[in-house]
Image 1: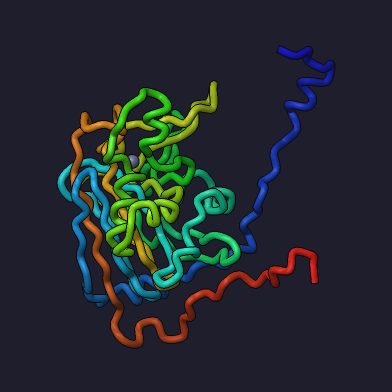
Image 2: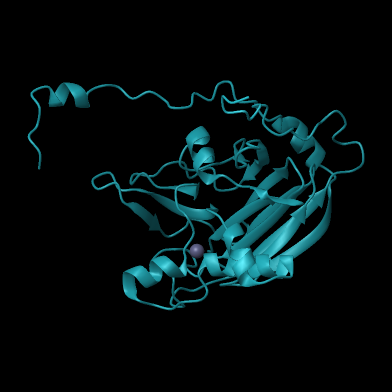
Length: 282
Ligand SMILES: [Zn+2]
């Protein structure tokens, strides 16, 4: 332990400032989205098997809903621009803009140089949960995704159904290509339904049994043409462990809904970020 300076307490007492005050973030028009959702028709449905992943499409202006169907189950969600896999969900910037967990009215943002809203949460049946006494909440953007490399590092295992592997196989199927080509597209996820936080004393990432129950759902408005990839995590409700076949696991349901013809009249899909991209050079 290094020597504590005389003004240590004064330095600790400095008040924090919000890194990214978000008052200037464009506010999504939830009323318009919800009005468009009325009368929208289901156009697709994908059941993601337990300990596996599937891809799905949602066009700009459509809605997609992720539901718990048979038992408490968390999901790991990747999002891409439907025709440009280089534009993908940026977990870190979403966290910087909205906080550790996201809910109704908040958005999943895309990577540089695009940095625009990809999807907006329009309904979250778990938004009653808030922040619990441990600092835990649901739908986090602080975790990464369970993966076989960390499992191997910590316990020497060779486990093949972590979310990272599930998403890799699903992307390879989508691309009709090799696993090696698909794997680099897999990125840090939105942990749908997962209940997580950081311990107050050691700052360690923790998980606890998800409060999700069959019938609960998280629903999004697709701001741009989207390809989604969703894994039903081998951790099940993440009450005990992941990266193994020990936990009880259940499928997750994805449904896609299309509004009627002119329900979104006047709405425009957001353009890519306005930064000129010269980085100070001509
Ligand atoms: Zn997982």
